[in-house]
Length: 80
Image (cartoon, rainbow, N blue to C red):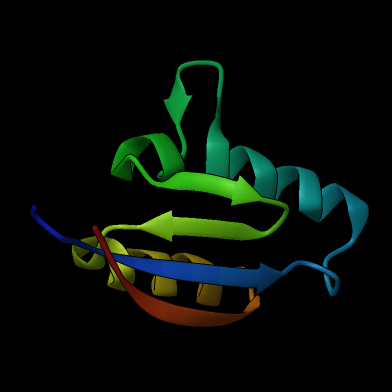
């Protein structure tokens, strides 16, 4: 049985104005022909403000969340 490493990230957008939350959502998920960071990295959106990503994409998400000045927490997981 193989194990997979993942990183669980929970973030907050409570500091963003409504218009900036929309822009954040588009940057996260994509819009029209532009791919967002989720489809580009094949990350999973588990729930409101909770993502599961591959460890090799952690720095990309850190930069993304820092750009938006979001606070986040992360947890390293080992899945069966």
